[in-house]
Each structure stands twice: as structure tokens, then as C-alpha cells.
Amino acid sequence: MPALVLIGAQWGDEGKGKATDQLGGSVDYVVKFNGGNNAGHTVVIGDDTYALHLLPSGILSPGCVPVIANGVVIDLGVLFQEIEGLEARGVDTSKLVVSADAHVIASYNRVLDKVTERFLGSRKIGTTGRGIGPTYADKMNRVGVRVQDLFDEKILRAKVEGALELKNQVLVKVYNRKAVTVDSVVEDLLSYVDRLRPMVCDTGLLLGQALDAGKTVLLEGGQATLLDVDHGTYPFVTSSNATSGGACTGSGIPPNRIDKVIAVIKAYTTRVGEGPFPTELDDGDGERLRANGHEYGTTTGRPRRCGWYDAVIARYATRVNGVTDFVLTKLDVLTGWDKIPVCVAYEVDGVRFDEMPMTQTDFHHATPVYEYLDGWTEDLTTCRTFEDLPKNAQLYIRTLEAMSGAPFSSVGVGPGREQTLELRPLL
Ligand code: IMP
Image 1 (cartoon, rainbow, N blue to C red):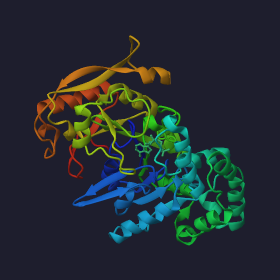
Image 2: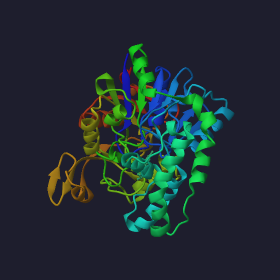
Image 3: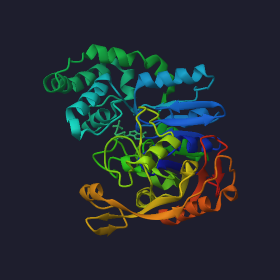
């Protein structure tokens, strides 16, 4: 039985939560392998809407074990807030397991994230301000605090002391902020330890044994391909590997056990935060996409930047992730346009690029080469099969599929569980 990876193909917010939720019923484990509470998943079940930031969407599927793996950075306050919020609504969260190797977001890293952004001014990244970047930086600098450190107060104190030695200098001398005390950080982290302890395990071992026993494991990526720290639009990226390779390092499941890579892709494109975005629309069409698609961040509430579908990005996502299946989302949002532009290549200083340009400078200067596809006026939200769709919507899907490098397995026409048209089975 397989290990499946599910990632975002664009700049995030493609609708991964819904796709995971859809698969959640048929998988045994849903694993979050990167990012932290910078992610935002909205899952609609019947009349209930759940907005999750840190917990894997699998938490909403009874029978499924949700796993927060080693590649994640955890804000413990948010973790328990989300757990309590779900329990209060009758969702059973008792199966959740957390890796002993995951890093925790200490309060000083939330402070540093915000003050650094302010300090950067016009060069800011537009982070979610949740302390994600500084926590991953600590991990790479080998001064991070891991979940397992909370089980040994002496070690925890020594690690926090070590980290604060430098950070307090920076906070006070560079940013003119108050120093953070070791006691306050240690006390804050230890306040969660009794509730955390029963959830913690060696998640790499757990998942390896689960695969040996024939269980199905879904590895759910936070953020998306173009926000990946290596393969995204650096430096306007998140600080983890959101592409399929990150699923292996972030979970301890090796590459040769991955059977499928499912990429979720919106029928148009959005981005939050700063950074290049060739098909971005600064006009009425952009406003209309934002309004029709409710394009406001789940985590920060920020309005998302909107633009047309970009097939160059789709092909790039296919190549970098080894996409085997695309899940196309939010097709219904495109109803009502006479012609729908689709970006098939870029032009940079008069030169055509069919693939992503090598340098960030070129990508910043890329202007889209559009093909114009015929639109439709019919409401798609009640369609339940591909054949129910108007001919031009069918053609839109098939044209995008031919340009994007991998087969489209399903199409979303609304947020509800039932508003998904299956083109070929995912499992
Ligand atoms: P950070 O992850 O908070 O460090 O933010 C870095 C960049 O990634 C910013 O442009 C954020 O807006 C973006 N980002 C982080 N998480 C998400 C997400 O879940 N969806 C979309 N963009 C995200």
C-alpha cells in the first residue's frame, strides 16, 4: 500500500486542505512534514467550516491518525488552542501524534520575525509573522529547541540560554527591544509539557512500520512549490522545503517508498506576501477573481494577489515534484468571463521562455505570453461529473492539462466535499 505526497503547485492556498480531507477517508495516516502555523487550511464539511493552521487536515477524518512530523516547527500555544477548539466542536483529536524531533517556536522567534520584517522595510518578505523563519534558522544554526528537549529541564534551560545569548544582543542592540529572560521562555515551554508528553513518539519509526504493515500514508505539504526555500522565488519564500523532496526529509520516509505525488493547482493563480508574480492582475479582473474566489488569507486575513493560470509554473511544479496527478481547484470562480487568458510562456526583454527563467532578475521581468480560451456563463457549482460541465469549461480543463505536464485527476467546483468531479481515481 502506498505513501502519497500531496503538495501545492503554485504559491499556496490552492485548496490542499479540501484535497487531503477528500483522501482522508481512505488513508490511515495524514502527515504534516513542513512549515508550522503559517499554513491555513479551510475544510468545509456540511454546514461546518474548519480553519486549521497547524494541525494536519486528517484530524477531521475519523479513523485517520494525524501526524506532526520532524520537519514541522510547532507553536505549542497554537497547537493546544486548535486542539481545544476542535474538541469543543466534538472532533476527536486523541489520535494525534507529534515527533520528538520537531522544533518548537519559542517566543523570541515570534518577536524576531516581526521586528526583522519591520527592519527590512521595502525589502520585507511579507511573512506571516509566526516565527517560522527564525525557528528554521535556529534549526540550521544548531541552536534550536526540539520537542524532546522539553522532557529534560536542564537541557532545555541550557539550550534556551545558549540561544538567547546572541538573540538578546540582537534584540536590544539592533532592534532596540527588551531582552527576553531565560526563565520566561523555559516556563512558557514547560507549561505545555504534561499535555504534550502522551502525544510524542518517534514518528519516523511509526510511519515506517505503518508502511511495512500495508497502511496508506498521506504526506501533506504546507505552503507550495514556489514558496519552497530551494525551488521557489527566493528570497520571497518560506523557510522550509514545501516540494515533494521535503516530504522525505520532513518525515523520515525514504524516496523509494513514495508512490504518488499529487499536486493541487488552482484554475487561476494567487499569492500572498511579496515577490514576483508574472500573471498578476492589478485591474478589475484581479478584483473579480479575489471577490469570486474569496481570496483572503486563512491565517492572516490578508487579501491575496490574483492572476491568470500560469502553465509555465505548472510544468515547473511537475518537474520539481515529479507530479503524477493534478487536482484542479476552484474552476467555478472563472464563470462569467468571455475569454480566459492562460499564460503559456514568458517574454523577458524580447526573448521567449517556455520554462522558468534561471535567474530571479529574469523572473521579475517576465511578462506573460497569453493564449485566450473561450469562457462560459453557466454556474458550475452544481455539476457533479465532467460531462455536466459546459463544453468550454471541459475544453479549458483539457487544454490546461495538455500544457501542465501531468494528468488532471479531479476538478473542484466549490468548497463542499460533494463539489469535486473525479476524472480518474486518485487511489
Ligand atoms: P513565512 O512562512 O511566515 O516565513 O512567510 C514567508 C512567505 O510565505 C510569505 O510570502 C507568506 O505570505 C508565504 N506563506 C507562508 N505560508 C503560506 C501559506 O500557507 N499559503 C500561502 N502563502 C504562505
